[in-house]
Length: 387
Ligand SMILES: Cc1cc2nc3c(=O)[nH]c(=O)nc-3n(C[C@H](O)[C@H](O)[C@H](O)COP(=O)(O)OP(=O)(O)OC[C@H]3O[C@@H](n4cnc5c(N)ncnc54)[C@H](O)[C@@H]3O)c2cc1C
Image 1 (tube, protein in one colour):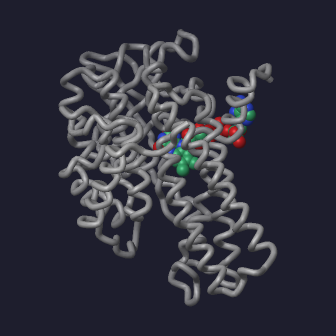
Image 2 (image 1 turned 180 degrees about the vertical axis):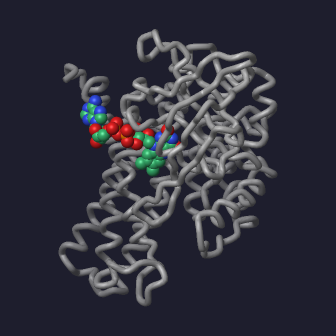
Image 3 (image 1 turned 135 degrees about the horizontal axis):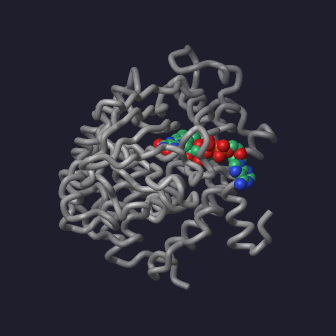
């Protein structure tokens, strides 16, 4: 087995590294998420100008038709340089591949360019108060009217809705059909009358996600993606990209950088020889090696044109455990300053570890909870009977 990169792949990684060296600016300290999003849009526009966003998209739509290995290399170089992620993540990772797979030519021309340069942000209106893991239980209704539909219902946990121009929305178009049928995939203009976005404050004190109330929101018929009542198949494409494994390459390198910082923090705080700290550092090192091996396996499958399949659930579980343990260690290493927050005197990394730890709780929920991933592993990989 040859796990080395080819000369072309190494040359590609060099090109990414040198572009980042020439163009990456250190982000300022942001006073709010609003500021961070505004800065992120400029940064993504800069990336898009040189075609470094959505590189796996076809060339005619602004991509580079990059191979999975090139996408992984880009993500790894990006993380190594500590470059901020493109702000239009839902647009680039989830919406773009779905529009490419199901969109008409008009829809592709209309939406794809502004996803890449972040001139229009996107959000995902899937989860509802009564439909998360069991997404097919969704109750948002789309009633046919002249020229389109009127959509009413409530969505929740909608990341970045307050900055988004567009939302991909699952709504029931045939209430009499079984749950997985009768759902359509609509693109909602978030500026339409009847859309009410209410931010939810999370543990970190920031409001990244929202409740979204839809009250007789008109969606024109040319904003249906895929066939009428065929939304479940379209949503499966979106979710396969959300739960896909490319994110794990970036996360591996991001956390390798974090672990280096934790080694330094342990040394400077004089706790390096503490048995519990040493155990924690060793555990995180091992967790990262496991994620790395999962990533190599994924990459070798993708390079041979094989979809990763249910193994993505395994990778997500490995990532979740790794990030939650490493983040907890980060806070532990802050010692007596652990309960302090950003801005407080003497807090390591200006509160970065506290924020990271509070956020890491979401890892076992977002993109499919750990229990659901374990169900998938049990049924589809281990072949255990359904409970
Ligand atoms: C940071 C973050 C960002 C998000 N962004 C978005 C977004 O932009 N758009 C969007 O639509 N959604 C978003 N979500 C929502 C996310 O997809 C859901 O939270 C997730 O799918 C779980 O659904 P739920 O919260 O309704 O929990 P539920 O499905 O109600 O689950 C509650 C508990 O029951 C367990 N459970 C449920 N079913 C089973 C089962 N069959 N077997 C065993 N245990 C089970 C779950 O594991 C969980 O512990 C986001 C969530 C987070 C944390």
